[in-house]
Image (cartoon, rainbow, N blue to C red):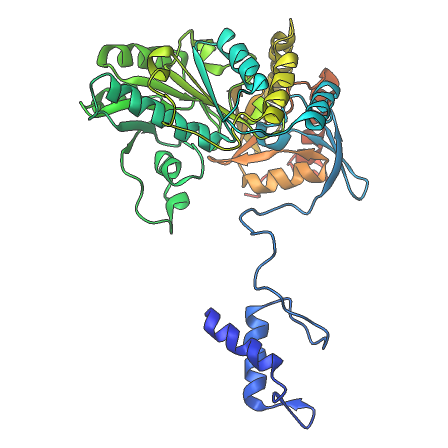
Length: 453
C-alpha cells in the first residue's frame, strides 16, 4: 500500500510540464505513473482523465447494492431503470407504513409548507401532541425527542445515570449490556455494543459498560455491583441475528432490578413501534421498563428518535441537562404523529399479528423444504430471521435477483422486516420469490444454494 505522500508526489509528477521527454514520460515519471495507477485503479491512459479526489464524494462507509430507487408504493420499490422489487428491508425496519402512504405524505407536505424547524427554545405543538400520545399508550410519563436510535440510546444512558445520582447514588454509573447487542455508532454506544470490529481504530472504549450473556439471568445477577446504574438490552437483538429475549427472562430482569434498585433500560429502536404486533415488544412479557429508547419506525422513514421514561427517571432531566438542535422539530413530529394515526387505529396491530402468523407458517414450510439453505426461523411479529446454511450474503443476493429485498444480520441470518402495512398478497409473493431464489435452476433434488458435499 502506498502512503498519501507518495500519491501527492505522483500527482505532482503528472501535472508537471517537465514530465515528458520527446513526447514520452521520462523513466522516473513512468514509475510514478505506475504507482499512481496502482493507487487509483480508475486511472486510464485517456489524456483527458482528471483526478479530483482519492475517494468518492460520498464517504464509502456502506457496501451499497447497485440499485437506485426513484419511487415506492406500499411494500414495493421501483428502480430508475424500471425494475420492481418487493421491499422486505423497509429501510432497515424504518418504513413502518410502507412507501408513499397517502396520510403520511399529505401530513409531511402540509407541515413542510407551514414550518419545518423553529428550535426547542419555543413550544412545538406537534412535539407536545406526540409526547402525550406516546405517554398515553405506554408505561412512560415523559418523552424526549432526538433524531436517531443511537442518540436515543445515548439519552437513555444519561437519563439512567442522572436518576441514580439524584436518588442519592452518584456512584451508580455502570451499565450492564448484553453480548451480541447493537446500540448504535456513537463512541459511547459502540462501547455499549461491545463488538470489537465496530470499535477497531476508534481508540479506547468509553468506560462504564460491561457485557454478560444474553438471556442469562444468573449472569446479570453476578454482574450487579453497588456501582450498577442500569441493565440495558434489546428485547429482540436485531443486528446479531434476531435473537428474542424470553418472556421469563424479561420478567426475571424486572424483578431483579426492583430488588436491587437497578433501572431496566430497553432498546426498542428496531423492535418497537408496532414491529412485533404490540406497540412495544416488552408488552408481550407483561413488564414495564423504567426507560426505553425507540426510533426507526416512529417516523415512517423520517428521522426521529425518542427516550420514554417514568416520572422517577425523567424528573431529573431539567433545563440544560440534555438537548438537541433538531430533535422534536415540527416536521419530524408531524410525520411521527401520522405514523401513530395508522398504528393506533382500531385493529391495525392485530392485523400485524395476523400477517406475522401467515409469514411464520409459510416460512416454516420453506425451511422444511430447503434444509440445505435454511436451518431455522426465528423472531417475533414482523421482525423475522432465517438462519442460513450457506453464507447469508449469497442467499440475500439470490433473493434480490428474484426481486425480493432483505437485510443480513449476524449469526448468518437473513432478516425480513417488511412494512407493517403489507397485505396477505405481499406476504405470499415474498415467500414465492424467496422460494424461487432458493430453488431456481435446482437439479437432483438439491437447491441452487445448497453446498455440494
